[in-house]
Image 1 (cartoon, rainbow, N blue to C red):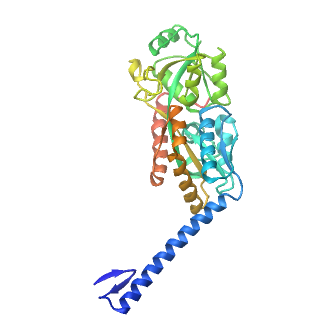
Image 2 (tube, rainbow, N blue to C red; image 1 turned 90 degrees about the horizontal axis):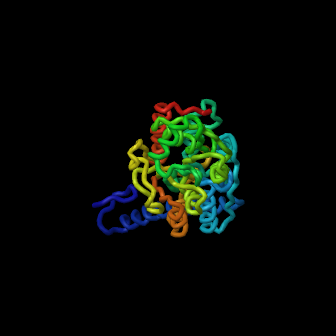
Length: 342
């Protein structure tokens, strides 16, 4: 005696065979319906171009990663996927646009910890809530940060920087992609943990800040390795330290903050793709299926790793908890070092 599909079956009689057949038919029908719904949803996503919003200007780390996603996603779907830059207000403008977009899967947001964590912690009247207004399609990659300096700054490591800056309190400057960006928050935490008095200069995007640094108009910048190491390799900036606990294999000669012996710091900047919270579950599931293929694509992985990043793999059921833990972790650091939305 055994059971299947809610029927009790005995022996090999005709009744038993009919019941087994009925059970298999029900299961097959359910599987076929689910597969058909998935296919229909994916087909619906091809009804018109998919926009990926990047809440910063062209050329920065988030923009570069967003374009990697758009390129691979478009190739895999054989569909038009475009990046639309919407910088402004420390990434608030573009992120709010992504939160309030029509929730049909055709407008997505590639975002970083700047928008999803730092802005939430620093701005009281933010027009979006990262935990309430978005659903994660998936986390893309994590990157080390580089503390870079203008090429002619007379300091080649963190200890020399501390000495140089303490002799000139309030004179040195550090740039960022805007108030509330990871560049701003991490830079402030790092410098204050060393007892330094530096002036923060925000810009509309990391690329603009980097151009100012390479032009000698600001002194320092804590930036995503995707963009920053190109400036170092070209000789237009110098690298002082990397942010994670371990050295980067792409720049093995650059020490970690912890190795400097001056202070402690451990962080990687992450990026993810998000949809408006009201997006139907079937559409989110279809997008997640496509996203998994994107992050498993060999060429995509190679491009992420070539920029110093690593592919992230967080199951959907853990993504909300991860975002919440990041908010709690950096919230404690922001409070400790009194980081403000200037």
